[in-house]
Amino acid sequence: MSGTASIVGCETLHSGDVSAQTPGDLTNIDALLDEANRMSDRPLFLDDLKFKVYVRRVSDFAATMRGCRLPLDSSTTIVYLQADVCREVCWWRSRQTGDSRS
Image 1 (cartoon, rainbow, N blue to C red):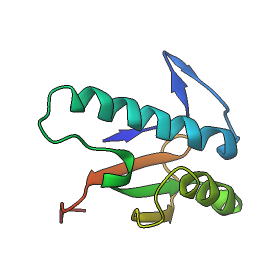
Image 2: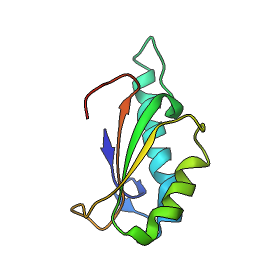
Image 3: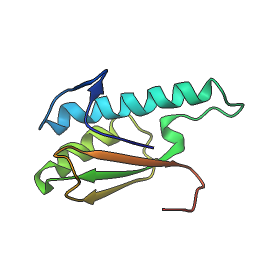
Image 4: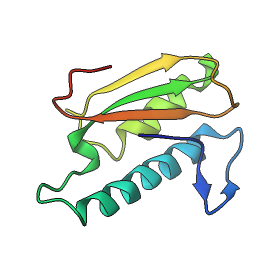
């Protein structure tokens, strides 16, 4: 699954502020999990996922890392990558624990 900066409805919030975007990104991913869990016998939670976090600007790494680590268990796998993605926002990709594909 993938997402982009804190989107609520059709509105992008906190453009250029990764400290504010990161909690919104996690909230959006959690909402997707809630919906998936309604149809599953095996519920998933944020801490069950492995994350690839794409950060556009090197100067945003520290704030992004803090924002990701605070709500997640310390054992949650997070890989941070600096990449100039197609929009000037952070992109998230996560995959379910145990999936060996990239």
